[in-house]
Image (cartoon, rainbow over all chains, first blue to last red):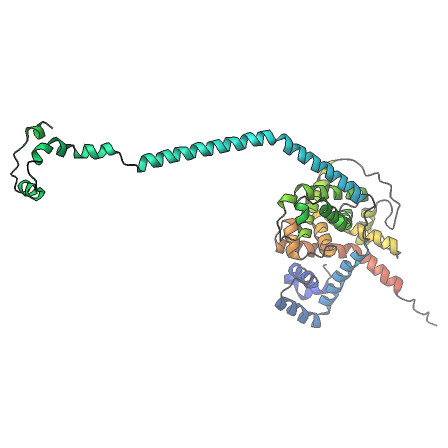
Length: 173
Length: 199
């Protein structure tokens, strides 16, 4: 490589240049890069030699023979696979009770969670009738007095003008 | 493969028959050992069967197959390198003699001249040249040359970036050239007709 004339011409890019040449030979360069390589090849004999050397070494690999599987290969391979399939099936069968238990547990947990959620939803959204009674208690306690007056507007007017006497019960509360 | 994934035995058998030669060829050139290649090829198809449920429709089957092949080969070579056993496999001395890699190194360095080779010997030389590459370079070369994979496919199979594949193949091809060049030169000398003697 030290005496490579091409290296003397382009000392700054020997390694990337090899990569570009190999990629060019493999058809892996984009159009612009391929065009640049081709342009340089027309004028650079050392680059052409380099390309030719790389190509020749690559083509030598065609001398390697294609190996053919022997007649028993497929048969013995399928036999091995059949054994593996049987082992897989056996494992699945053995794991069935555990899987069933797991499925049952998941189902039970899911149902329990659904029941709990339903209970909370019903309990949360159903109004408590007692709450209304508690809220209305002050009115209920004085209902006999309020029933003496039929007109609610009149009651509001009395309240507005502070004409209701102070209640001893209120003070005690 | 989709049918094999769905436990169609006949489909799986067809896959084996269709790809067995390619896988064995690949593994033999990668490991340099025919018997090992055969065993590893069976291991590959067994793993394909076990992983069949994970095959993604639309993915190229050969890329997936050779990803598994790559892993099987890598693991085998790794465990082989850990075992300090000597390979006593009987092998007829070819062009390189009984220590072929050593002879190649000597030829490449010019210590001994290469001689003109016949076809069978050329095959031996090329096989040894491939074996002289490191594992990743060899893998990339075989995937590119024999499987016709693009750089993107090789990158996916070997779990590398495309740029890394580009560098790897560049170094591999340069190394192949360095090892084979003396034999090309000798071929050229052998093919050049003798010059007539001057009077």
